[in-house]
Length: 207
Ligand SMILES: Nc1nc2c(c(=O)[nH]1)N[C@H]1C(S)=C(S)[C@@H](COP(=O)(O)O)O[C@H]1N2
Ligand SMILES: [Mo]
Image (tube, rainbow, N blue to C red):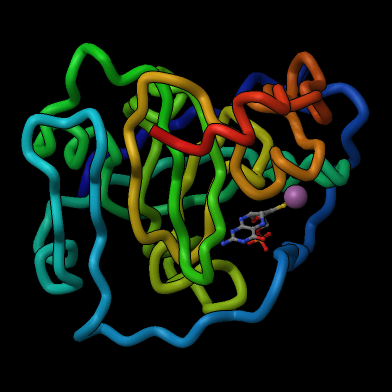
């Protein structure tokens, strides 16, 4: 099949501080599970790019896939080991859009207006995916199917379910959970759980 990247950390220091391992896969999100309409679905990359990208569902399906084997860490303190995700690498899509040197942050957009922000260097990593499968099965709607973002090195709230696009920006702007007190970056190894968004930046809005 496709290439597989194993980004699990070694056993001795596998669990980030303050986390507990679960074997189940909890379902966690705000609001209702959206319905999927393949004909209307688009994935967009906008903002600081040379060629704004708009992909149909069929176009996404036609792109080469890759696998990422990883542990996931939720800010509510559960971690789940050995997740094999498959999907389209984020990097391939960013390359198609032509990221400008002025792009430093991304606002990730999902259904129902959900957003989450992260530095471009955290989004543009080879293991990050537009994930379509988990452990050999298509992602269920509860877990973000048919397509969610996977950014395994940050807390799992950055891995937006029901993904619809990336907006590349010069400045950072807090997304949904970040406006509600979550950290702007969310590194589980340094316990970047909660932060304090800059109120001036929030009023100004993205872009
Ligand atoms: N669209 C969307 N994606 C989301 C969320 C959300 O509320 N909406 N919650 C995040 C949070 S807080 C977590 S922990 C993970 C949970 O993913 P799971 O339900 O597949 O475990 O999804 C993240 N992605
Ligand atoms: Mo979460």
